[in-house]
Every structure is written in structure tokens, then in C-alpha cells.
Amino acid sequence: MKTIFTTLGISLLVLAGCNGQKKTTETDFIQDNINNAVAQETLQTDIIEKSGKILNPRTIDKDGNIVYVPIDDWCSGFFPGNMWYTYELTGDEKWKPLAEKYTEALDSVQYLTWHHDVGFMIGSSYLNGYRYADKKEYVPVIVQTAKSLSTRFRPKAGVIQSWDADRGWQGERGWKCPVIIDNMMNLELMFEATKLSGDSTFYNIAVSHANTTMKNHFREDNSCFHVVDYDPETGAVRNRQTAQGYADSSAWARGQAWALYGYTMCYRYTKDPSYLDQAQKVYNFIFTNKNLPEDLVPYWDYDAPNIPNEPRDASAAACTASALYELSTYVPDKGYKEMADKIMESLASPAYRAAVGTNGNFILMHSVGSIPHGAEIDVPLNYADYYFLEALIRKRDLEKK
Ligand code: GLY
Image (cartoon, rainbow, N blue to C red):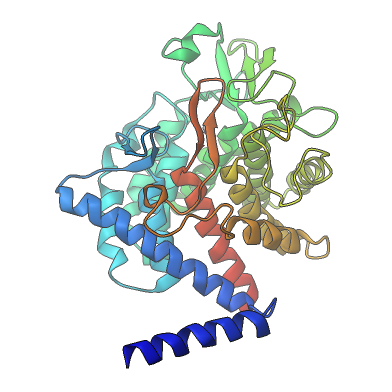
């Protein structure tokens, strides 16, 4: 019996394969990716639950071991964030207590003031709990985090300082008030904190930061620098440089994705057309770039010296896809959704999507953390998975309409 059914099953699959060549519907695409995500995340979570510890997986090391990070790591929100997204995508109640547990493990992050990434950390964990499970008790945490982030606002320069200039490797660069393009992503938490508390301070800081960044971070060709260092006393720009890109003058791929996503998101909260315009300028830079590969998954830097023999960055592609789904809702006639769909097809193909049980049980392969630091080169990253799942939700919602 088993053999007959197996044979029958294989025949049906083969038939479906021939017949359905390119007839895979969008619904199938989404369901297939949900199934895959559930399989990987179940394996990932089971290992952690069995350990009896609260662990937070970020990537794998050179030997393929899973790398877990402490809660003050900038990536600590993405693991619980992936559970909230899986909960939203499946509706399966099993994910909710897990998402709550690993979100609430980040409780003390709301008081963290020594770097700017609390927007990523609390945004992907607590804010998603509030959004997808109506966790009203998370609101004070979101507002307190915005207060902590506000302590890094430098009024003379009009920006939130990203990194401290006197610690770690950043302390060796001679910076006074370094601001990285990534910081645009932290503004979502500020806008939400104003909505939730009625305190406009957070909104005003976010707008000031977005405007100053728009003025100082972008080049003539609409690409952006990674780091702009300010004099916090005068607001003057001291330097425009890179930390994770190939060169000061190059276009680091994830930085361009942060910029596209950041200005699209700022438009969501402000309806300021200059933000929409900025997002589209970044889009034009990315999608007319001669070094963007045909599958739309960029090399880690658009100016990396050995293209095409350079690592790709799937995290940049996933973030770009998610941003483009949102952008397509504001500007429906420019093909942004279609471009996002193409990126998603690439990411969901065997070239980037790992087989179940491999890749440290992360969903996507082939991302890059920081080549100049020799760190996380051609590996899975939890935030690549996070923006991939977010893009999947956005795609699903757009296609439902
Ligand atoms: N925010 C750090 C990074 O994009 O690698």
C-alpha cells in the first residue's frame, strides 16, 4: 500500500511539475514559504527549549555552530520577531507563548541607552506583539524604549547619535557623533511611541533625524554614505565614511536597503512627500545599478572590487522586498510590487532558501554581516529571515485585496 501511495504521490508531483510549469499560484508560493519557515523555526526553537535556557540565535559560525547573542546585541529582537511573524502567518496559537517568552526576555532593553539599536530590538519584538496579539501591556515598554533612545538625540546636530564614540571598535575612528544610515530604521519605534503615548517629542525627534539624514547622508547619485560624523556642539558634518561598506565612497548594499525602507516608513507616519521622493530616489539608484545581479540579490556592496566574485547579501534583498511592498501601496503604478515579487522568488529559490534542517535552521543563506570586520561573511542572519517573513506578510496582505 505504502509503495503504491508513494508511487502515486510521486507521479502526481511529477505531473503537477510538468503541467503546472509556471502555474504555481501566488497562494502556493506563500503557503510553501510558510511551511518552510515553520519547519525551520520549529527545529530552531526546539533546540533552545530543550536547553532549558533563554537563547537568542543570530547566525552560524565557521564550523556551522549556531551563534547565540546576549540581549543587548542589536539583533536580539529578530528571533522573537520571527515568532510573531510566524504566529501571524499561520494563526497557530502554539507560537504565541513562545513569542511572548522570548520577547519578554528583552524586558531590560527598554532602559538601554548606550547604542541606538533599541528601535530594532524592541520594534521587532514588543511592537510586533502589540500589533499581532494586541498585547497592550507592551505599550509602556515601547514608550520607555523611545525615552531611552531620545537620550541619544543631539539637538544642535538634529540627529540621534548611533554609536558611542568612546568604546569598542567605533572608539578607534576619531568620531564625535557618528550617525549611520541604519538609524533610519529605529525611527519607527519613535513614531509608534508618539501614537501610543500622545507625547510628540518622539515624533519630532524622528522627523528631525530623518530631515538631517536626508540632507547629509546622500550623494548626487542618490546612494548614501554609511556613516556621517557630526560635531554635536555645532551640528557641522565632520566626516562621511563607512564602517561596513567597501569604501567611504562606495554604496554598501544593506545601507541602501535601510534607506529605502526607512524613508518609506517615515512617509507612512508623516505623509511628507519629500520622504516618498527620497525612497524612490534610493529605489532608482538600486534598480538602475549596473552591478545589481539579474536575480536582484545584491552583492554586499554595489562597488565591491571583485564583482561578480563577491558575496551576495540576502538580508539587503529581503529588507528591500519588504520596503517595496509598502512603497507599492503609496505609488501603485511604478512596478514596485512586481520588483518585490521577483526578489522574493529569488530568495525562495534553492539558491538562497536553505533545505529544512540545514543552515543552522535559519531560513535564508548567503547574507553578509561586515566584511571589513571579517565577520559573518556568506552566512544566515536572523534579520534576513525577519525581513523575508515580513515581506511575506505584506505580499499576502496585498494579494488578499
Ligand atoms: N545595523 C547593523 C547592520 O546593518 O549590520
